[in-house]
Image (tube, rainbow, N blue to C red):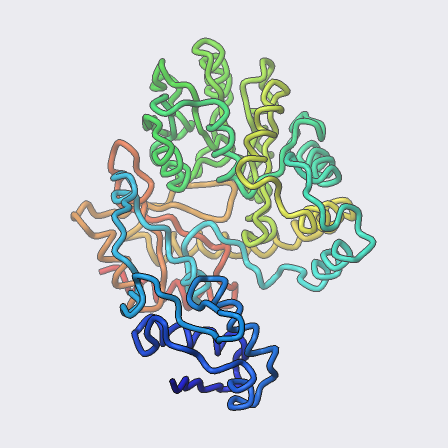
Length: 473
């Protein structure tokens, strides 16, 4: 037979020979029992070493495509699927559970970073100290680095856990030690792990309504019965919590998306409710490092005297979401179960990143970065507030918020579908917006938008606001 193999020099030669012979067998150009040229002859014809040709034949033989007879030659194996054209992708009968068909697709994060992107949840990476971070990370990747190449502790890097405990103790008055801290892949994984060790499918979970959509979808995917609890100017309406709830997820220092802080009376009532119904409270303190007016709001965790609160946060807003570093502070009875759950989920978070972050915190670099970013974000926040008062007063009703990297505003019109129409027109002007409609659980929120000012550059803010204004009719 004639075996025609063409080498283009751009791929590894053994792989090219293997793939082309395999294709010829599958599409019937090489028939069962047909002899292939000796490797010496093939190597000479292709101007490659005999070892290269041997390696390709050996791989084909190991997978059952070829068989060899000593002193006779190499032949195409006589197997039933030979001669059939290789299918592109088989039609699989596998289907996900129906609930996944109804689950909204993740946002197109590749689009985040547009010049005039007002969606919430993203910091400004242009101010991140990349050179310093590279140096710290490089130090963690040296041959002499402790534990490099080994699996790590599921609860996290010991140095980082201690650094986090000190950081939240000073910055947020969270009473904790390194033993209570577990490093996670962001808040989302922290909540996932807490739910896994505390809940069973079908358990009732209470959430603020409107809410943070990714956590809502997480609980739904885990098969929990989700109950939305109203939010007013004092935060979560504790009197509306369901008596059979096993867990309540809340962001009391800066409710997402409305921005209200949970009042002291409501905080105490929530803690009393959790004691009475034997529930766990998951406190998401996602962006309290950025506070613009008034004194810092004490976290719910600081008022907890019975160990009902699990405090979760991350470094996504203060540093970069791409680092995927979050943490939870949990009471001792949960430590062992959380450690096991983290081990089963992904064994441990990336060690070099954790080590570099520990140094970043302990050297004072995090504190310095936060001071710089507070100045940057405050200027943007003040400009947004001025624009809402002067240029958008006829179309938007902003909700006063003392912290964070976003502000929520209601549409002044009740015309159905106006929020979607504004978003579509804004996109035509190169502006990305986030609708409040995504944040509802049991009730459709009033039409409005969550405006993030973390991602858009300060120098682009005025033009972005002007473009946005044209989207309102």
